[in-house]
Image (cartoon, rainbow, N blue to C red):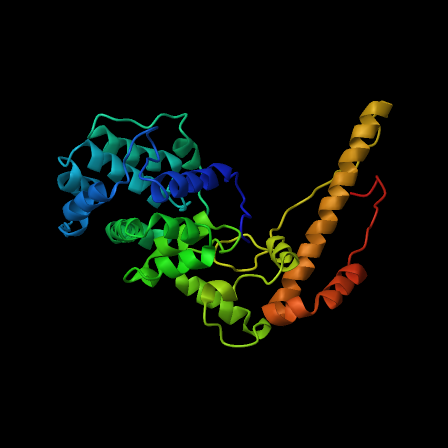
Length: 336
């Protein structure tokens, strides 16, 4: 799966890289050029205002958030808005308009705004995968986890930060050192956003375990590391999976399409050669799509009957079944 997506997501990866470069490796900003927002002392202030004094009332998140940090000064408010930007980068089940609205409202408490032209505004247009309803309802805990993580990160020597940031597995080791990391969806989201070639776009540890269970026949032994276990061992394996995958939970679902063709009614004049040429090209396109549709139907049936492990171990047999069962049938124009 990795960088596979149904949408244009390049801006999301660019925003994630800006977070790594400007906010983790420096004390800079995700939204404001030449500003110093992610400084340890500002992180400590937002920790005291938000993490150390939680509001467990039943009011909305934004209302409570304003009470907690709305009077803490521009630096803390800007940091709060940028933390929300990181929180919103991955999930696709929150619309871009809503993401922008929340961030702009928080920035407005300090007299700032989020321009439409900003990279983050563009990154909010699409998401990587659904975080589910739980990611929204547990927002205070996910944000508190991010604050704790960055505070711990800032305590590392600069040389160590550079080393860990350049190595996906060292960063995984670091992020898992934060208390209760495994229960946080943001743990999985951050690993993917920062290292999309090494971690799958799955925002749940439970979903990763389900993938491992489904493909247990392809794994030699009980995996010690779930992220390594679901990582294809080579590029060809990943490409094979990408052509058949369309969900962030790792389920193998085959897209179904349709193709239609109508016979030329009797008595209609022959079209010009240029029109016939375009029509011929369209017909070839439909034939191609029809063949691909037939292949997907057969592969879907084979996957359902064999199970994932046997299916991937039986690719020659599946290919032979496709070859034997896909036929081209040409009907007379008078057929109706």
